[in-house]
Length: 551
Ligand code: F6P
Image (cartoon, rainbow, N blue to C red; front, side, top):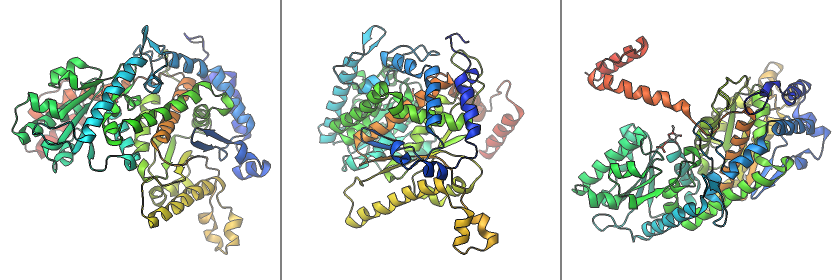
């Protein structure tokens, strides 16, 4: 038993039962599971809002699913979920509530954190964001020289970049097409340089997005952007900065210190984690791009899945199911990674976004009480849009030695007003998605290969083992609401896994050490300063770097 009265995960009878059950399934093939149960595809399908989820191509039976749900019950997933929705401080190492669900709750909801209903504050900021977005979109917000804003540059990193950048791409068809939106995150000066080199400062608005407003990459880029702007305008501060810089942050003091008027700051709160923040003020660039109404539609999509997760029974609860399937493969089939493969060009940044959501949340190796865990936690999440991946790494998915469960995500309708020929291409795109799921699950037997007249020595090479699990997520079209639904689905999936693994999914201490060391090493690069305790390898690399730079 641990401090929360919970036994070690791998000593629970539910865990042991799953281990035994896994052995029984060792030789089972998906072909057989489908043959045995003609209703399998229908039975293993869920509808959540606009999302149609087919999980029939998983190496599971009713017994597996039952055992997984028992594990969820024994590990208190529902209790932790309810505590999260109630605003309890389930981020224990930072002693914070975890209330991203309040960001998309209806205005009438009452959600308490530290004795205060947080919903009116959320609605107030959303209203301010809406007014500001409308002003920029309509041209009413003027730059320092009186010109309207044509380009918005969001400067932020991690959760202050990935969400809006991903959603901007995803919802491109809904954006203000006469404006440009760019996203700068990397402290590599090339990022900002390429983003602004063809812009007119008089028509450019910078949105500085940083929860803490202390993140070195963001503050460095923001400072350089301010220099670029002032030099371009021939201005010396104050007025010009006020017209061309706004801040999204929880830290008014630092925003003011940077020189941005706090009237031009859109706030959020410490109970919003960075990687859960893009439906807070952090989404301002997206709201300017798609307009406040579309943004609210997206929030409604999030909320729909929040409510589903909160209230749906375990058998029909999609985030619970997806989370448990990940545990099934990661902990009982030794799967190390999870591929997310969207069949939509608009979702080109979706997997990169999920990498932070999943890997920063569940890349932990101590439990909530600080003990080293004795089981695998979060997977490596990766993937790019199909069909590009098919001509790159799918070979390994089909015939490699590793098990890589995958999500295939697609839409019935193309969104943008494409020319007719391009609309027709959509069927080809989706045919690829369906074909991949089929090939991964059922493969091609040696006999089937032989029946095609293939020479015997090539039969092993042309055989596809199949039995590679996928979830297919299908929706009508990639609308703002559907995007919100999809993201909330993954957020809660990650939550479920963290709850079962008994880790704190809401802190991110693992990113700190690198930050501290970078600060220590920098003077060695610039001034050749002695860094006490620098290891021989790093010292050698620093010396080589200085030599190459002629220092
Ligand atoms: O990389 C750590 C991290 O704190 C992320 O969790 C966060 O999204 C990112 O840095 C940016 O932080 P901030 O919004 O405070 O600049």
